[in-house]
Length: 140
Image: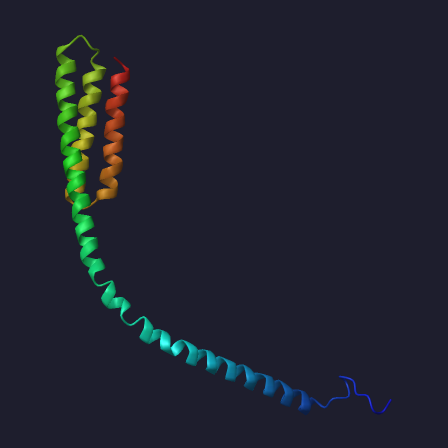
């Protein structure tokens, strides 16, 4: 059995040399990969120029959202106050015009939030104000 070698018969230096060759092969593969992706920088260099207009679009969208929050808040405030005045003149329970007035106040607060740029909070405040007015209408 002298001709066959087992793993235990291989000298440690030979194992280290084989591992070094495998590592060198891996380094060559990584270098080839780096060359492959070196052109990607040139390919995507124009992406910054292409999306430079995105900042202007973002500002335009933010301005549009602020105006929408302010306009919707003002409209719902006026509607809530008008409904509160009309319901207070009728035979409705006192809770109904109070609910409309509170809902209108929440919507006015939403308009102020929208003007300050807090459009997400303004949206939720508009929803809450409208729900308060709808709840007050259920008491009639």
